[in-house]
Amino acid sequence: MDSFWLLALRIITGLGGAMLVVTTLSAAIRSFVLPRNEVVRLNVWVFMGIRVLFDVAARFANSYERRDRIMAHYAPVALVALPVAWEALVSVGYTGMYWAVGEGTWLHCYQLSGSSLLTLGTIDDFSVGGGILTYSEATLGLLLLTLLLSYLPTIYQAFSRREVTVALLELRAGTPPTAACLLGWLNHDGSVQNDDAQWVAWEQWFVEIEESHTSLPILSFFRSPQPGRSWVMAGGLILDAAALLFAAVDGQRPRQAELTFKAGCLAMNRVYRFFDAKAGAEPSALLPDDGGETSGRTAFNEACEELATHGLQLCHDRDAAWKHYRELRSRYAPAVDFLTRLTMAPTRQGKV
Image (cartoon, rainbow, N blue to C red; front, top):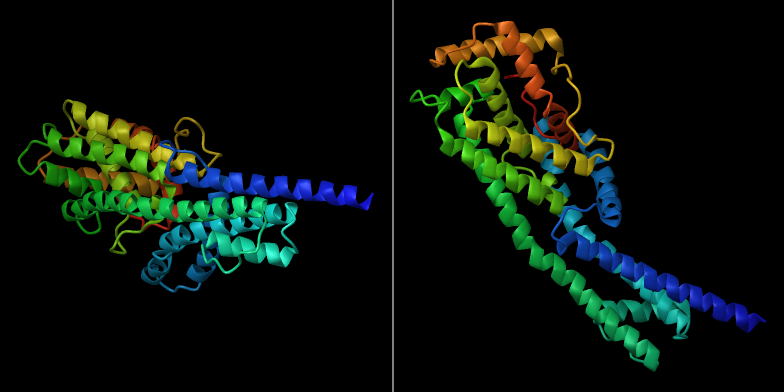
């Protein structure tokens, strides 16, 4: 009777170990090979565990610059920790399978698993079944490392392309960056409503953000080289500029600017929904501006005055323009606010 229960335990342990290995391999494939955005819970648990440690460290920072330096290490550390977690789980799974085929004690099976996974070759006394498992584990160990190493260039290429646009915006939007200043730069020759080239470039940037930051979500946490920059802030700035142009500037709405605004709203909201399951399928209802209605209206009026100094013709009905601006901003503001908190990005403190 004891041998029956031992056999049953070995079968259950072996199946459990195989399931753990398959689940881990599936997580690795869905993370780097599957060409679509999918939430991999195993990776989420790893990233959240690392994030808790960094959040604790960031609480002791007495300035944004120091907090930014701390959080700049989060994404690289989490990315490196991912294959470590994968291989640890694979090792545990194969330990159970080795024990199930009768390779000895748990300690011996663990040593055999570690030796096979890391291709150390320090243990070679195993049965035929153990040999098959050994070679398969060594293959998986190399595969998991290869997946990460092969995708590191892809991750950093996407990061580099993203940061080029972020850096260029800093040169055009002033210090601190504002949508009004950006529109003023676009109107340097009086062609703010006809300069399609810049809006096309920003549309392409938003499309790449949507694809890369959902298929490779760790990219969202790679911080800009300079503490005052952020892809979230850059996206919000472009969308604010488009909203201000549509609401406050008198004249025909440029078609390309409308396409860019739509692409930006889709991109920011889809990244938002990827990280927050509570986010709705559509942009949320109208929300008050940061700082309240009064301060938001004051910032809007100041932005309009700045636009006038740059030679832009403004709409006569300022109240209608303000209402229109708030409606447009409600389409992306919740997503930008959430991503700002999630990535600990710098804020523009209510500037328009």
